[in-house]
Every structure is written in structure tokens, then in C-alpha cells.
Length: 254
Ligand code: G
Ligand code: G
Ligand code: MN
Ligand code: NA
Image (cartoon, rainbow, N blue to C red; front, side):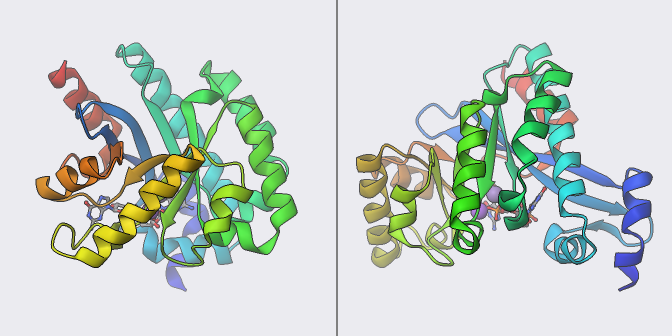
């Protein structure tokens, strides 16, 4: 509860930091995108994980404020990427379920992109299936508006939670991120391989781009490529890190 009381100070004193983790093309290892991941650098407790503080952000009514904070940081990061000669790298932002019920998100995203001179098509929004369940009409409406601006929509943590295959068809989605729980025991687990195989085949039919999360070993990347998964994310490539570190590595990679 203590922590919750310090949230306003955290915003006003800039204690929230947005870190970025690469998404790579599994064939070429080129960085195609970055996922924005929030961290709280607390003056007493050090760097706190979002798993710990996101419930407090939600409970204290700060979901929208945090999303706008991350969106602004992402647009600034897109400016830096363009200046570094990497305008094709896109940035993905995680949205809490409350955002899909918020009609102002799409217009605020457009305004923020305009303010920074970046294209909305450089942004991707990651949503979870939980976001789609509660208010189907409002969620579809918000997703359609975001897509009309050119942003892409990714379904995060796929395979956990509700995992209704119908969601893949019913909602306007571009990408599906296979949850790291299914990647962890690949290639050892025949069952997990079968599950990823089914998801890959379905995604192919529906025209959805697949991302495998939590790739930590080269064999996992290999297995994913063989199953037709195009993109990957995980510690094998990069950990989430501050933008400055990402820019340094991109420059070194040439
Ligand atoms: O980065 P890490 O693996 O610690 O993230 C833990 C969880 O926090 C993940 O489920 C991730 O989606 C979520 N998360 C990280 N950054 C954000 C953010 O900016 N907004 C929201 N809503 N969730 C985030
Ligand atoms: O729920 P979401 O997919 O947004 O969460 C992303 C989280 O996954 C981040 O907190 C990030 O730190 C974590 N993550 C990213 N790559 C790996 C990985 O290779 N292994 C593990 N265990 N976690 C990872
Ligand atoms: Mn995510
Ligand atoms: Na995920």
C-alpha cells in the first residue's frame, strides 16, 4: 500500500522508465521491432517489475496515464530510431484491458504521433484476450479505429487465458504472440510442439503474423523457423534494456 501512495511522485519525478526488447526476424536475425516494457526505478526499492506495480497502477486509477506515458516515450524512441537510420523498426506497446473501453485512445495516439512527427503505422498495440471478453463491441470499435490510423494489433500471451480460436477470426488482428509457456520446453516437448504447430497452421490460414516469445535457446529459434513462425523475441537475442543501449547495439550491428 505504501508503494501505491508513491505513484503520483513516481510520475512527477520521472521514476518510470520505458525499456525496449527487440523482436527479430528468425531467418535473418534483423531487428524488426521493439516492445516497450515499463520499469519503475524507485529511490528506495530499486528497479521494480511491472508484475508488482501494474495492479497498483490499475487500482489507483492510473492506467490511462501510464499508457500515455509509454506512448509518448515510444514516439520519442521512434524519432531516435529514424535519426539512427532505422525508420523501419516498429514499437509495440502493451495495453491494459481498460484501454479498449476508452474511446479517446485512438485520437490521442494520432495526436501524439503528429506531435512527434512519426507515423502511426510505426506503432503496434499488444492486447490480451481478457481485453476482448468483457466488452466485445467497444473493444472491436477501438481496435478498428487504431487500425484505420495504420497501427497494427497484436494478440499477446496467446495460448494462455481464454484462448478462444474464434477470437483470431472475430477481432481485427494482425499478429499473434505465442506465449513463452509454449516455447520453454521446445524442442523437448512433443505436446508443446504440436500446439505451436496448430497455432502456426491456423495463423497461416488467417493471414496473421506469428511471434514466438521467450526464445532463450538456439534450438527453440530453429524449431520455430521450421514451423513457419516468422518473428521471435527473447533473451537469446536481447533482454529488455534502456533505449540508449538498444541504439548502441543497432549502431554496432551496422
Ligand atoms: O517486462 P516484464 O516481463 O517484466 O513484464 C511483465 C508484465 O508486465 C508483462 O505481462 C507485460 O506485458 C507487462 N507490461 C510491461 N510493460 C507494460 C506497460 O507499459 N503497460 C502494460 N499494461 N503492461 C506492461
Ligand atoms: O506479457 P508480455 O508478453 O508482454 O511480457 C513480456 C515479458 O517477457 C517481459 O517482462 C520480458 O522481460 C519477458 N521476457 C522476454 N523475453 C524473455 C525470455 O526469453 N525468457 C523469459 N523468461 N522472459 C522473457
Ligand atoms: Mn507484450
Ligand atoms: Na506476452
